[in-house]
Image (cartoon, rainbow, N blue to C red):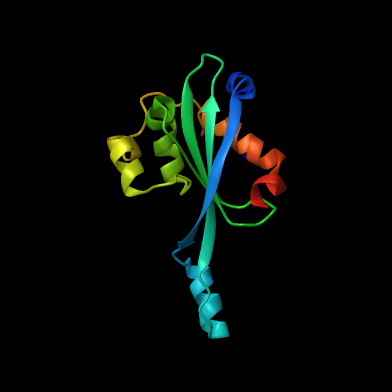
Length: 148
């Protein structure tokens, strides 16, 4: 379950979410996948979907949000998230990285810098910025629309 304070949830609900597309990537196998494939003596790659959203807040600021999941209709499984806003960088990235839920790439790592390894000065108790929360809520409301 996503940690969110009521005020952030209200701000996320006021955002406009636009779907920009999706991309499929072949991911590295997890340890359970490797064990399962060894026992079956087969090689099956794990692939993921990265959904790209543009989220506009009620103040008019627009940010890109990326969400990586397994390609299944039940999106309650593990996911990784990235948003290009400063709130995400300075308050969310570190916490998500600690839980293995930060979507990382060389490009995002260069944008986040030390925010990935340095704990935020204040702990808000919220794991996602309003933009990422709005995009995740949209994806969870309409999974078949985006997976199809």
